Amino acid sequence: MELEKKLNILADSAKYDASCSSSGSTRKNKPGGVGNGSLGGICHSFSDDGRCISLFKILLTNHCIFDCKYCVNRASNDIPRTFFTPDEITALTLGFYRRNYIEGLFLSSAIYKNPDYTMELLLTTVRKLRKDNRFNGYIHLKAIPGADPRLIREAGYYADRMSVNIELPTQNSLKLLAPQKSKDAIIKPMSVISSKILENRDERKHYSSSPAYVPAGQSTQMVIGATPDTDLTIMTLSENLYKRFRLKRVYYSAYVPVSSHPALPGNIVPPLLREHRLYQADWLLRFYGFKAEELLNADNPNLDMELDPKSDWAVRNLHLFPVEVNSADYSMLLRVPGIGVHSAHRIVAARRHHSLDYGSLKKIGVVLKRACLFITCRGKYYGNISMNEALIKDSLASAGEKSKDKNPQWQQLSLFPSPDRPVPAQVLLPSITGEL
Image 1 (cartoon, one colour):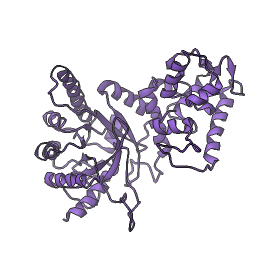
Image 2 (image 1 turned 180 degrees about the vertical axis):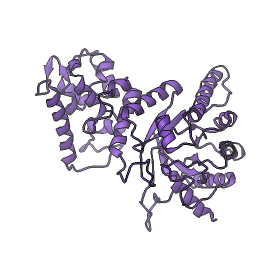
Image 3 (image 1 turned 90 degrees about the horizontal axis):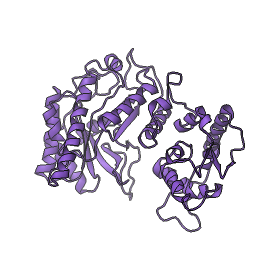
Image 4 (image 1 turned 120 degrees about the horizontal axis):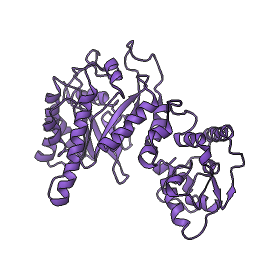
């Protein structure tokens, strides 16, 4: 099979893995244009310093011995099958890198023959890139559940990030849709990678020449909507993964129907809003000091589709509000809707010198449409409605609807906005930081 045809097949097979920020586009190049976003195999991720980087996203093979009902590459699915050799992936990666198409590699694979055989091929590929060709670009490598821990440990010295996809949040869900997989087989390589990362950090404190091991950490992915698992179950699992294995990210992938099976939901629209809410809740776990049991409980096992998770929590805990911005501690400021991590830091720093008023908060970048309902400034409440759960929820929901209905004249964000059209802080900061 021609290399280009292999590339199209295996790039298309890799697109359902959401463990990077984005992939897939229909934007083709035109005569006289620059770039092409429609060709398979290019995805985008973000480095620790905030740079958006392009990765060559590919499967080693889509031949799979497993028959996971939700997966496009399952053994029973009648699709074109092909295979890259380690030399072919090495040549493609170096060729794309030299042409400045990519800045790194995202390499995964279906399970071919057995986990050890597949992991050995992946290890051979990254070893060829790093050692034989001195490739120093970014590499994100998938660890294969069930593979020998020695193979996974060695691969970590060549990869910047590794990931093991959980796919489904409970053992019962795995039994239903992926009976050949087990939770223990998935968790074991996570534990191996986590332990080795900690061991390597200790080594590097004493021996600076020690090679770095998975310096960008590890991540995982869960498919959302293929099983009836609640958001509480999903967020509790994510919280435990962050604590136990110190994961960098948990990615949530809205289930896309690629097959029909009695155990799968019918013809559904991918639950993109639910995916979005889970990412918002995940952000609260990682950066805002929330716990899964605070955001959700047995009476409210799923996230509200009308309100973001922080606003929903605040509405259900009105006895804690309003808070005085000039005296509330940092952790409480983080729990106010409309105040993000950077805004909270600025408030704490600014009030050391003078008390803050409503105008000061606007300059700092607080989203006052939401925050005004939960704060006081110098003892004055600016919410204009009483602290009533129904009234505040309606106000937040209607504010969200109004923002959707508006049709502003959007402008491209610029690093150097013109003096006559500066980008307001309340617009610029949330768009960059993702604050709630």
